[in-house]
Amino acid sequence: MSAPHDKDFESIEQHEHEHHIVSPRIYLTIVCVLLIMTGLTVAASYVEMGIFNPIVALAIAAFKMILVVLFFMHVKYSTKLTKLTVGAGVFTFLILVGMTLSDYWTRAWGRW
Amino acid sequence: MSDSQVVSNQVVVHGAAEGAHHEHLPYQRHHFETYAQQSDATNFAMWLFLLTEIMFFGGLFTAYLIYRNWYYPAFVEASHQLQIFWGTANTAVLITSSFTMAMGVWSAEMKKKGALVLCLVITFILGIVFLGIKTIEYSEKIEKHHVPGFHYSMQSFLNPQSDPEVYKEYKDKPLPYDMARHTEIYFFLYFAMTGMHALHMIIGIAILGFMIFRARAGAYTTGHVTFVENFGLYWHFVDIIWIYLFPLLYLISRHQ
Picture 1 (spheres, each protein chain N blue to C red):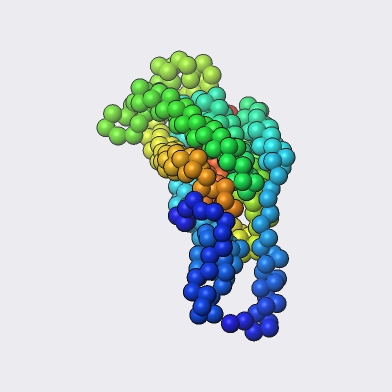
Picture 2 (picture 1 turned 90 degrees about the horizontal axis):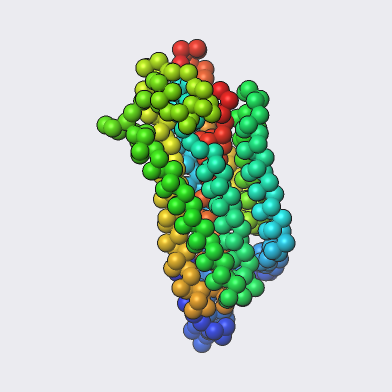
């Protein structure tokens, strides 16, 4: 069933796939940062920043998302396959939003 | 994912006489070489499902961005109808529930049955609290006739002073009729996005209820944590959607 090179591959896999248990201390740190960031984004919305209001709000949201994905969803400790899958998801989403908006923004200038 | 029967940790050997089979833990499906391979495959499948969810919500977010640019004044004034207090409270509730869910996964990994049940119950309750707050918000929209449809009312936008609570905070100017009509699109997207999010919460809460019973029977503390782990991924994903909905719907138009 297994040629010698298969065995090597298996041992590499075995090593990479060791189940990593994230400690409660990390979860607690992350949830505190998330709650502070929530407070921060609400506070920022009360400050007049013009065009930067949505930018700051979305930047904070993106930061919170990255924390949730890396630690709560264990992606930091996951296999390369999982990391690639998550990356592909973000990339495809950015194409969906980016290409659609670039189309809307570059046709019928100023008429919408 | 439904292979989480209550089993002791004895090793099962299927068809050992044929020599083509291997020993494995009782919760390892026979067609996997190792348990690690099985849990990786399941984990990968869960992420693929979440990718389809990203594209599903992605469509809604894209629609929101386009219409917000299109009917900007209508979206600004319509978003003033949302109460930041409730939005913030719900964000805190959901983030805390994500934390208790993560602790649930940890409890399952450490085979702590009592802690797991407790974490799942708290997550369940926080999910209900989230929906409760959403109900308060929805009922206010229903009272003001801000639900899109035949009974939709543009009064708050044609004549902002008729809506004193919002007016005293934002001092909005009346919108021309043509623009005020488009506030309905804001509320359509508001209900579509928060409604789909709430539907995901309801499904999640239902699964949590099921998991609480199974966890009490000891189902997830045998070393086989796949179900709890993958449900955790779902719950955190729903949390991430809200992390974006909150600023986009409630916060970014406060000043315009």
